[in-house]
Length: 199
Image (cartoon, rainbow, N blue to C red; front, side):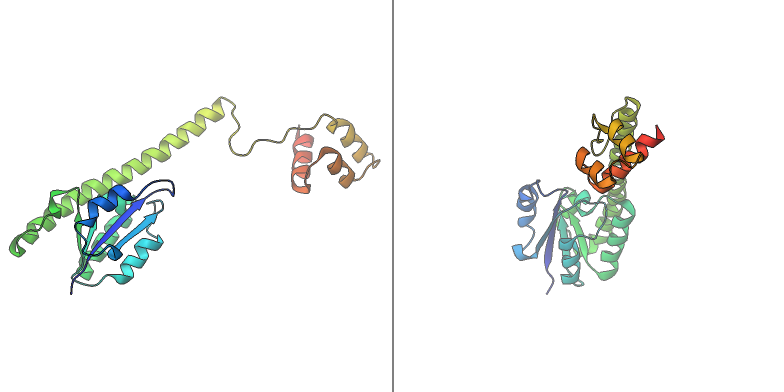
């Protein structure tokens, strides 16, 4: 007996799956066959997706709201679409007109239309991912050009650093005493020593 599966995904734990769930419920006979993930679409190693793959058999149908719910990486999406085709699993995208049932003798037309639309949608999903990365890179470059520090805040040199450094170098205090005085952990302390000596 063939089963209709559903797959829904959002990128972060804060986002909500309800909208996709509502859209997909009417296509799937039992909600236990709807698999979900709250994870990035950059790769396919997601628990819900992988568990669904294990459960699916030839003759089954997979319903997704839109192609970008499957993933964001064009090549990986294509690989999985080819895998589904080889395994005899039909993929239907609700946001596309091809999700509707058609007579058996016309299914080749639907497959052809699906292949064209999938190529366009996967290209768009990939392009969006590239644009996000580009915007991030440009943002980082602009921030650096303005002299903004990115990442963890830099630990400044304490006021007494110069005096304590000289005492330490003159062996009047130990490194441990120096660390206690400036309230630094060993790793941070030696990093700051390197920075100080490089100036």
